[in-house]
Structures are given as C-alpha cells and as structure tokens.
Length: 83
Image (cartoon, helix red, strand yellow):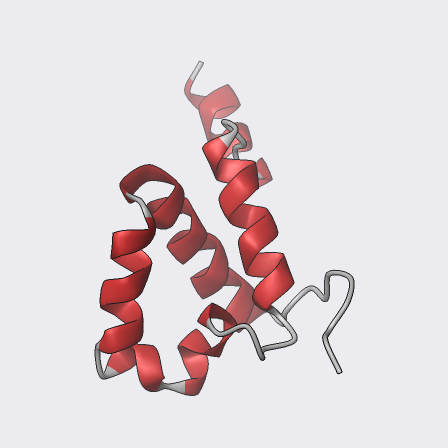
C-alpha cells in the first residue's frame, strides 16, 4: 500500500528533513545520493530519504518549496530583526 498525503514528521526528524531538502534543492539529487550511500544515510534519522518512509512525501514537498525560493519562517524572522 502506497502512502498518500503529507505526514509532518516530529520536530527532530523535521529539522533534519528540512535542512537536507534545502541542500538538495541547492546542490541537486547527487547530494541526496551521497547521503543515502553513507553510513549516516542508513540510520533512522535519514529514513525520510526512502520512498517507504511515511515522511518521504513531506521531504519531497520541502525540496520543491526550497527550489521555488521558499524560506523557513524562522529565517524570515531573523531577516526582519537584522533590518
């Protein structure tokens, strides 16, 4: 059974997924491939990289978000404080 919809991961996984998605949006899928083939990429912390993960759709959505110029709310708030 395929997972449908987007399930938001818990905060600790979400932080890693967001950061990884941001890097993949900037540096391409090769970056993702390198993570997946590393020892770290095989840990539960990076399970969202795999199609079978319930958080994979969230991760893919974040890649699109960042590729289209999306900025996290916290980063946006930081920019306002600097101004």
